[in-house]
Length: 437
Image (tube, rainbow, N blue to C red; front, side, top):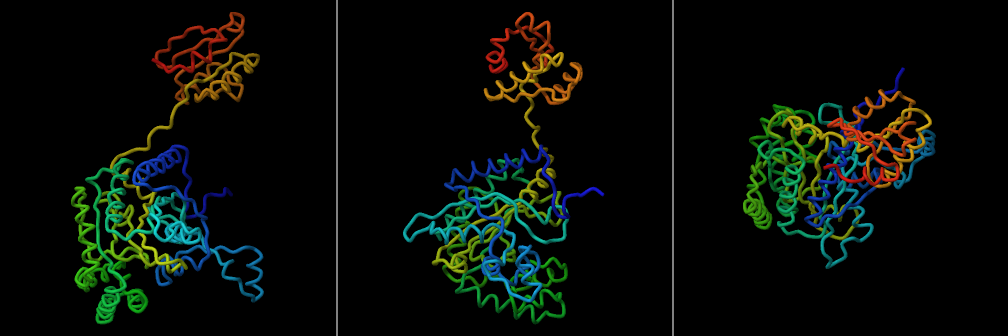
Protein backbone atom coordinates (compact mmCIF):
# COMPACT_ATOMS: atom_id res chain seq x y z
CA UNK A 1 0.00 0.00 0.00
CA UNK A 2 1.36 3.40 -1.02
CA UNK A 3 2.12 5.95 1.72
CA UNK A 4 0.53 9.33 1.06
CA UNK A 5 1.06 12.71 2.69
CA UNK A 6 -0.56 12.95 6.16
CA UNK A 7 -4.15 14.16 6.26
CA UNK A 8 -4.29 17.94 6.37
CA UNK A 9 -0.96 18.42 4.59
CA UNK A 10 -0.09 18.83 0.95
CA UNK A 11 2.94 18.88 -1.27
CA UNK A 12 4.03 22.05 -3.04
CA UNK A 13 4.96 20.69 -6.45
CA UNK A 14 7.59 22.56 -8.53
CA UNK A 15 5.30 25.19 -10.09
CA UNK A 16 3.70 26.09 -6.75
CA UNK A 17 6.98 25.80 -4.84
CA UNK A 18 8.44 28.35 -7.26
CA UNK A 19 5.45 30.62 -6.66
CA UNK A 20 5.80 30.24 -2.86
CA UNK A 21 9.43 31.34 -3.22
CA UNK A 22 8.37 34.36 -5.27
CA UNK A 23 5.55 35.04 -2.79
CA UNK A 24 8.06 35.27 0.07
CA UNK A 25 10.43 37.40 -2.01
CA UNK A 26 7.59 39.82 -2.78
CA UNK A 27 6.84 40.07 0.94
CA UNK A 28 10.48 40.84 1.70
CA UNK A 29 10.45 43.53 -0.98
CA UNK A 30 7.17 45.22 0.06
CA UNK A 31 7.72 44.91 3.82
CA UNK A 32 11.42 45.70 3.52
CA UNK A 33 10.57 49.11 2.06
CA UNK A 34 8.93 49.86 5.42
CA UNK A 35 12.01 48.74 7.35
CA UNK A 36 11.02 45.14 8.20
CA UNK A 37 13.81 42.57 8.46
CA UNK A 38 13.63 38.78 8.27
CA UNK A 39 13.72 36.63 11.42
CA UNK A 40 13.63 32.82 11.71
CA UNK A 41 12.33 31.16 14.87
CA UNK A 42 11.98 27.43 15.72
CA UNK A 43 8.91 25.57 14.46
CA UNK A 44 8.36 24.32 18.03
CA UNK A 45 8.46 26.21 21.31
CA UNK A 46 7.73 25.50 24.95
CA UNK A 47 4.01 24.84 25.22
CA UNK A 48 3.77 27.41 28.01
CA UNK A 49 4.66 30.18 25.54
CA UNK A 50 1.45 29.59 23.61
CA UNK A 51 -0.67 29.01 26.73
CA UNK A 52 0.45 32.33 28.22
CA UNK A 53 0.70 34.26 24.99
CA UNK A 54 -2.30 33.12 22.95
CA UNK A 55 -4.62 32.24 25.83
CA UNK A 56 -5.67 28.95 27.37
CA UNK A 57 -9.34 29.57 26.56
CA UNK A 58 -8.75 29.96 22.82
CA UNK A 59 -9.59 27.13 20.44
CA UNK A 60 -6.00 27.26 19.19
CA UNK A 61 -4.56 26.27 22.58
CA UNK A 62 -7.42 24.18 23.97
CA UNK A 63 -8.16 22.13 20.85
CA UNK A 64 -5.77 22.64 17.97
CA UNK A 65 -2.15 22.55 19.12
CA UNK A 66 0.13 19.67 18.17
CA UNK A 67 2.18 18.82 21.25
CA UNK A 68 5.43 16.99 20.66
CA UNK A 69 7.27 14.62 22.95
CA UNK A 70 10.52 12.70 22.77
CA UNK A 71 10.64 8.94 23.13
CA UNK A 72 12.40 9.26 26.47
CA UNK A 73 9.78 11.65 27.87
CA UNK A 74 7.01 9.40 26.59
CA UNK A 75 8.48 6.55 28.65
CA UNK A 76 8.55 8.87 31.67
CA UNK A 77 4.86 9.72 31.28
CA UNK A 78 3.83 6.12 30.69
CA UNK A 79 5.63 5.08 33.85
CA UNK A 80 3.74 7.70 35.86
CA UNK A 81 6.47 10.34 35.98
CA UNK A 82 6.30 14.03 35.10
CA UNK A 83 8.00 15.96 32.32
CA UNK A 84 9.73 19.28 33.05
CA UNK A 85 8.11 22.41 31.64
CA UNK A 86 11.06 23.06 29.32
CA UNK A 87 10.50 19.63 27.75
CA UNK A 88 6.79 20.20 27.09
CA UNK A 89 6.91 21.39 23.51
CA UNK A 90 4.33 22.25 20.85
CA UNK A 91 4.52 22.94 17.14
CA UNK A 92 3.85 26.61 16.55
CA UNK A 93 0.20 27.31 15.69
CA UNK A 94 1.03 30.92 14.78
CA UNK A 95 4.12 33.09 14.47
CA UNK A 96 3.65 36.06 16.79
CA UNK A 97 4.34 34.38 20.15
CA UNK A 98 7.66 32.95 18.94
CA UNK A 99 8.83 36.28 17.50
CA UNK A 100 7.91 38.15 20.68
CA UNK A 101 9.72 35.48 22.72
CA UNK A 102 12.83 36.04 20.55
CA UNK A 103 12.59 39.82 20.99
CA UNK A 104 12.38 39.43 24.77
CA UNK A 105 15.08 36.75 25.01
CA UNK A 106 17.61 38.67 22.90
CA UNK A 107 16.61 42.15 24.13
CA UNK A 108 16.01 43.43 20.60
CA UNK A 109 14.21 46.49 21.93
CA UNK A 110 16.41 48.03 24.66
CA UNK A 111 14.79 50.88 26.55
CA UNK A 112 14.84 54.02 24.43
CA UNK A 113 15.68 52.12 21.22
CA UNK A 114 13.89 52.28 17.90
CA UNK A 115 11.19 49.63 17.46
CA UNK A 116 12.14 46.19 16.17
CA UNK A 117 10.47 45.60 12.79
CA UNK A 118 10.54 41.90 11.95
CA UNK A 119 8.97 39.63 9.33
CA UNK A 120 8.78 35.86 9.02
CA UNK A 121 7.60 33.20 6.57
CA UNK A 122 7.12 29.49 7.13
CA UNK A 123 4.92 26.59 8.22
CA UNK A 124 2.43 26.65 11.11
CA UNK A 125 0.51 23.70 12.57
CA UNK A 126 -3.04 23.29 13.88
CA UNK A 127 -5.03 20.11 14.49
CA UNK A 128 -8.11 21.25 12.62
CA UNK A 129 -10.56 19.34 10.46
CA UNK A 130 -8.97 19.57 7.01
CA UNK A 131 -11.03 21.41 4.41
CA UNK A 132 -10.49 23.75 1.50
CA UNK A 133 -8.37 26.63 2.70
CA UNK A 134 -7.72 25.06 6.11
CA UNK A 135 -4.87 22.59 6.54
CA UNK A 136 -3.09 21.08 9.53
CA UNK A 137 0.22 22.29 8.17
CA UNK A 138 -0.06 25.62 6.41
CA UNK A 139 2.23 28.48 5.49
CA UNK A 140 2.09 32.01 6.81
CA UNK A 141 3.89 35.26 6.16
CA UNK A 142 3.75 37.82 8.94
CA UNK A 143 5.25 40.95 10.49
CA UNK A 144 5.72 42.13 14.06
CA UNK A 145 6.63 45.63 15.20
CA UNK A 146 7.72 45.79 18.86
CA UNK A 147 8.46 48.98 20.76
CA UNK A 148 6.07 51.62 19.36
CA UNK A 149 2.50 52.34 20.39
CA UNK A 150 1.66 55.09 17.92
CA UNK A 151 -1.40 54.52 15.69
CA UNK A 152 0.81 55.27 12.69
CA UNK A 153 2.40 51.83 13.19
CA UNK A 154 -1.03 50.19 12.90
CA UNK A 155 -1.97 52.13 9.78
CA UNK A 156 1.43 51.55 8.18
CA UNK A 157 1.06 47.80 8.69
CA UNK A 158 -2.47 47.66 7.29
CA UNK A 159 -1.55 49.72 4.23
CA UNK A 160 1.57 47.63 3.72
CA UNK A 161 -0.48 44.43 3.75
CA UNK A 162 -2.96 45.73 1.19
CA UNK A 163 -0.06 46.78 -1.06
CA UNK A 164 1.38 43.27 -0.73
CA UNK A 165 -1.86 41.59 -1.78
CA UNK A 166 -1.99 43.77 -4.88
CA UNK A 167 1.68 43.03 -5.63
CA UNK A 168 1.06 39.24 -5.71
CA UNK A 169 -1.91 39.70 -8.01
CA UNK A 170 -5.07 39.73 -5.86
CA UNK A 171 -7.34 42.41 -7.34
CA UNK A 172 -8.08 45.25 -4.92
CA UNK A 173 -11.74 45.19 -5.92
CA UNK A 174 -12.07 41.57 -4.74
CA UNK A 175 -10.94 42.35 -1.18
CA UNK A 176 -12.71 43.83 1.84
CA UNK A 177 -10.83 45.31 4.80
CA UNK A 178 -12.57 45.11 8.19
CA UNK A 179 -11.33 47.17 11.16
CA UNK A 180 -12.26 47.44 14.82
CA UNK A 181 -10.83 48.33 18.22
CA UNK A 182 -10.65 45.82 21.08
CA UNK A 183 -10.05 48.48 23.72
CA UNK A 184 -7.44 48.22 26.46
CA UNK A 185 -7.11 47.08 30.06
CA UNK A 186 -8.95 50.23 31.17
CA UNK A 187 -12.12 49.83 29.11
CA UNK A 188 -12.23 46.18 28.05
CA UNK A 189 -12.93 44.56 31.46
CA UNK A 190 -16.25 46.41 31.80
CA UNK A 191 -17.10 45.57 28.22
CA UNK A 192 -16.28 41.87 28.78
CA UNK A 193 -18.67 41.87 31.73
CA UNK A 194 -21.38 43.47 29.62
CA UNK A 195 -20.96 40.78 26.95
CA UNK A 196 -20.85 38.04 29.60
CA UNK A 197 -24.10 39.29 31.10
CA UNK A 198 -25.65 39.42 27.63
CA UNK A 199 -24.67 35.81 26.89
CA UNK A 200 -25.96 34.63 30.27
CA UNK A 201 -29.25 36.40 29.61
CA UNK A 202 -29.54 34.57 26.28
CA UNK A 203 -28.04 31.26 27.43
CA UNK A 204 -30.96 29.22 26.13
CA UNK A 205 -30.34 30.51 22.60
CA UNK A 206 -26.56 30.01 22.65
CA UNK A 207 -24.55 26.87 21.97
CA UNK A 208 -22.80 24.99 24.76
CA UNK A 209 -19.40 26.29 23.68
CA UNK A 210 -20.52 29.93 23.83
CA UNK A 211 -22.03 29.41 27.28
CA UNK A 212 -18.71 27.98 28.39
CA UNK A 213 -16.89 30.94 26.83
CA UNK A 214 -19.09 33.34 28.82
CA UNK A 215 -16.98 32.66 31.90
CA UNK A 216 -13.58 32.22 30.23
CA UNK A 217 -13.56 34.71 27.36
CA UNK A 218 -16.99 36.04 26.41
CA UNK A 219 -15.67 38.05 23.45
CA UNK A 220 -14.88 34.80 21.63
CA UNK A 221 -18.65 34.29 21.21
CA UNK A 222 -18.53 36.92 18.46
CA UNK A 223 -16.43 34.46 16.46
CA UNK A 224 -18.82 31.49 16.82
CA UNK A 225 -19.70 29.85 13.50
CA UNK A 226 -23.10 28.67 14.78
CA UNK A 227 -25.68 30.66 12.80
CA UNK A 228 -28.06 31.00 15.75
CA UNK A 229 -25.27 32.26 18.01
CA UNK A 230 -24.18 34.72 15.33
CA UNK A 231 -27.74 36.05 15.05
CA UNK A 232 -27.98 36.51 18.84
CA UNK A 233 -24.56 38.20 19.08
CA UNK A 234 -25.58 40.78 16.49
CA UNK A 235 -27.63 42.33 19.31
CA UNK A 236 -24.82 42.17 21.89
CA UNK A 237 -23.15 45.33 23.25
CA UNK A 238 -20.60 46.82 20.84
CA UNK A 239 -17.03 47.56 21.92
CA UNK A 240 -17.03 50.87 20.06
CA UNK A 241 -19.68 52.10 22.51
CA UNK A 242 -17.44 51.28 25.48
CA UNK A 243 -14.00 52.57 24.43
CA UNK A 244 -12.12 54.85 26.80
CA UNK A 245 -10.98 58.25 25.49
CA UNK A 246 -7.42 57.06 24.73
CA UNK A 247 -8.60 54.00 22.80
CA UNK A 248 -11.17 56.02 20.89
CA UNK A 249 -8.54 58.59 19.90
CA UNK A 250 -6.15 55.81 18.84
CA UNK A 251 -8.84 54.16 16.73
CA UNK A 252 -9.91 57.42 15.09
CA UNK A 253 -6.30 58.26 14.24
CA UNK A 254 -5.72 54.86 12.62
CA UNK A 255 -8.78 55.40 10.46
CA UNK A 256 -7.66 58.92 9.53
CA UNK A 257 -4.33 57.53 8.25
CA UNK A 258 -6.18 54.92 6.20
CA UNK A 259 -8.43 57.63 4.79
CA UNK A 260 -5.41 59.74 3.85
CA UNK A 261 -3.89 56.78 2.01
CA UNK A 262 -7.20 56.13 0.19
CA UNK A 263 -7.45 52.65 1.70
CA UNK A 264 -11.12 51.70 1.89
CA UNK A 265 -12.34 49.82 4.99
CA UNK A 266 -15.49 48.68 6.74
CA UNK A 267 -15.93 49.16 10.49
CA UNK A 268 -17.00 45.88 12.09
CA UNK A 269 -17.65 46.18 15.87
CA UNK A 270 -18.02 42.37 16.14
CA UNK A 271 -14.52 41.67 14.81
CA UNK A 272 -12.45 40.13 17.61
CA UNK A 273 -10.00 37.85 15.77
CA UNK A 274 -9.13 34.46 17.27
CA UNK A 275 -6.41 35.13 19.82
CA UNK A 276 -6.51 36.60 23.33
CA UNK A 277 -3.52 38.90 23.10
CA UNK A 278 -5.05 41.64 20.95
CA UNK A 279 -5.61 45.17 22.32
CA UNK A 280 -6.96 48.21 20.51
CA UNK A 281 -6.63 47.87 16.71
CA UNK A 282 -7.73 44.61 15.08
CA UNK A 283 -8.35 44.08 11.38
CA UNK A 284 -9.04 41.36 8.85
CA UNK A 285 -8.86 41.13 5.07
CA UNK A 286 -11.49 39.03 3.32
CA UNK A 287 -12.10 38.03 -0.28
CA UNK A 288 -15.60 38.92 -1.40
CA UNK A 289 -16.23 36.10 -3.90
CA UNK A 290 -15.20 32.55 -4.71
CA UNK A 291 -14.06 31.29 -1.29
CA UNK A 292 -17.28 30.69 0.65
CA UNK A 293 -17.10 30.94 4.44
CA UNK A 294 -13.30 30.48 4.53
CA UNK A 295 -12.79 33.91 2.99
CA UNK A 296 -10.30 35.53 5.39
CA UNK A 297 -6.84 35.78 3.82
CA UNK A 298 -5.05 37.66 6.59
CA UNK A 299 -5.34 39.99 9.54
CA UNK A 300 -3.90 41.02 12.86
CA UNK A 301 -3.75 43.92 15.25
CA UNK A 302 -2.12 45.47 18.27
CA UNK A 303 -0.93 43.45 21.30
CA UNK A 304 0.54 45.84 23.84
CA UNK A 305 0.65 43.33 26.73
CA UNK A 306 2.06 40.23 25.02
CA UNK A 307 5.73 40.89 25.80
CA UNK A 308 4.89 41.05 29.51
CA UNK A 309 2.89 37.80 29.24
CA UNK A 310 6.00 35.97 28.04
CA UNK A 311 8.27 37.44 30.71
CA UNK A 312 9.54 40.67 29.14
CA UNK A 313 9.32 44.33 30.10
CA UNK A 314 6.27 46.31 28.92
CA UNK A 315 6.69 46.59 25.14
CA UNK A 316 3.86 47.64 22.83
CA UNK A 317 3.45 45.57 19.69
CA UNK A 318 1.58 45.30 16.42
CA UNK A 319 1.53 42.56 13.82
CA UNK A 320 -0.34 40.60 11.23
CA UNK A 321 -0.20 37.23 9.48
CA UNK A 322 -1.49 36.17 6.10
CA UNK A 323 -2.20 32.63 4.98
CA UNK A 324 -0.38 31.58 1.83
CA UNK A 325 -2.86 28.82 0.97
CA UNK A 326 -5.79 31.21 1.39
CA UNK A 327 -4.06 33.68 -0.92
CA UNK A 328 -3.65 30.95 -3.54
CA UNK A 329 -7.39 30.28 -3.37
CA UNK A 330 -8.06 34.02 -3.72
CA UNK A 331 -5.83 34.17 -6.79
CA UNK A 332 -7.58 31.16 -8.31
CA UNK A 333 -10.97 32.75 -7.62
CA UNK A 334 -9.75 35.86 -9.45
CA UNK A 335 -8.57 33.75 -12.41
CA UNK A 336 -4.87 34.30 -11.75
CA UNK A 337 -2.70 31.24 -12.56
CA UNK A 338 0.74 30.31 -11.27
CA UNK A 339 3.44 31.76 -13.53
CA UNK A 340 5.14 29.19 -15.76
CA UNK A 341 8.41 27.74 -14.53
CA UNK A 342 11.46 29.25 -16.24
CA UNK A 343 12.55 27.22 -19.27
CA UNK A 344 15.95 25.81 -20.16
CA UNK A 345 18.36 28.18 -21.91
CA UNK A 346 20.40 25.50 -23.64
CA UNK A 347 19.97 21.75 -24.12
CA UNK A 348 23.24 19.95 -24.87
CA UNK A 349 22.48 17.00 -27.19
CA UNK A 350 24.83 14.30 -28.43
CA UNK A 351 24.53 12.08 -31.52
CA UNK A 352 26.24 9.17 -29.80
CA UNK A 353 27.90 8.24 -26.52
CA UNK A 354 31.32 9.33 -27.78
CA UNK A 355 30.12 12.94 -27.80
CA UNK A 356 28.54 12.70 -24.35
CA UNK A 357 31.64 14.02 -22.56
CA UNK A 358 31.58 17.17 -24.74
CA UNK A 359 27.89 17.74 -24.02
CA UNK A 360 28.45 17.25 -20.29
CA UNK A 361 31.44 19.64 -20.22
CA UNK A 362 29.51 22.34 -22.09
CA UNK A 363 26.53 22.02 -19.73
CA UNK A 364 28.83 22.54 -16.73
CA UNK A 365 30.49 25.55 -18.36
CA UNK A 366 27.17 27.16 -19.24
CA UNK A 367 25.82 26.62 -15.72
CA UNK A 368 28.91 28.29 -14.29
CA UNK A 369 28.14 31.23 -16.61
CA UNK A 370 24.66 31.53 -15.10
CA UNK A 371 22.58 29.77 -17.75
CA UNK A 372 20.08 26.95 -17.23
CA UNK A 373 21.57 24.04 -19.12
CA UNK A 374 20.30 20.46 -19.46
CA UNK A 375 21.40 17.27 -21.17
CA UNK A 376 20.28 13.69 -21.68
CA UNK A 377 20.99 11.23 -18.85
CA UNK A 378 19.21 8.22 -20.34
CA UNK A 379 21.00 7.44 -23.61
CA UNK A 380 18.07 8.67 -25.69
CA UNK A 381 18.20 8.91 -29.46
CA UNK A 382 18.90 12.33 -30.93
CA UNK A 383 15.25 12.60 -32.01
CA UNK A 384 14.11 11.83 -28.47
CA UNK A 385 16.58 14.38 -27.09
CA UNK A 386 14.99 17.05 -29.27
CA UNK A 387 11.57 16.06 -27.95
CA UNK A 388 12.87 16.33 -24.40
CA UNK A 389 14.42 19.73 -25.12
CA UNK A 390 11.11 20.94 -26.50
CA UNK A 391 9.24 19.61 -23.43
CA UNK A 392 11.66 21.46 -21.17
CA UNK A 393 11.10 24.68 -23.10
CA UNK A 394 14.72 24.92 -24.23
CA UNK A 395 15.48 28.06 -26.21
CA UNK A 396 18.43 26.48 -28.04
CA UNK A 397 19.86 23.03 -28.62
CA UNK A 398 23.54 22.34 -29.20
CA UNK A 399 24.30 19.11 -31.09
CA UNK A 400 27.62 17.28 -30.73
CA UNK A 401 28.46 14.44 -33.12
CA UNK A 402 31.29 12.85 -35.13
CA UNK A 403 30.82 15.18 -38.11
CA UNK A 404 30.78 18.27 -35.94
CA UNK A 405 33.80 17.13 -33.93
CA UNK A 406 35.78 16.48 -37.10
CA UNK A 407 35.09 20.04 -38.22
CA UNK A 408 35.78 21.55 -34.80
CA UNK A 409 32.24 22.91 -34.48
CA UNK A 410 28.89 22.18 -32.88
CA UNK A 411 25.46 22.77 -34.42
CA UNK A 412 23.27 25.28 -32.59
CA UNK A 413 19.53 25.23 -33.31
CA UNK A 414 17.15 28.02 -32.35
CA UNK A 415 14.07 26.11 -31.17
CA UNK A 416 11.70 29.00 -31.99
CA UNK A 417 12.82 29.59 -35.59
CA UNK A 418 14.40 26.14 -36.24
CA UNK A 419 17.40 27.92 -37.74
CA UNK A 420 20.70 26.05 -37.40
CA UNK A 421 24.26 27.28 -37.61
CA UNK A 422 27.70 25.84 -36.91
CA UNK A 423 29.65 27.47 -34.10
CA UNK A 424 33.39 26.80 -33.44
CA UNK A 425 33.89 24.72 -30.30
CA UNK A 426 36.30 27.22 -28.76
CA UNK A 427 33.72 30.03 -29.08
CA UNK A 428 30.64 27.97 -28.19
CA UNK A 429 30.22 28.93 -24.52
CA UNK A 430 30.86 32.61 -25.27
CA UNK A 431 28.28 32.68 -28.09
CA UNK A 432 25.62 30.86 -26.06
CA UNK A 433 26.15 33.08 -23.02
CA UNK A 434 25.11 36.14 -25.01
CA UNK A 435 21.40 37.04 -24.76
CA UNK A 436 19.37 36.15 -27.82
CA UNK A 437 18.37 39.06 -30.02
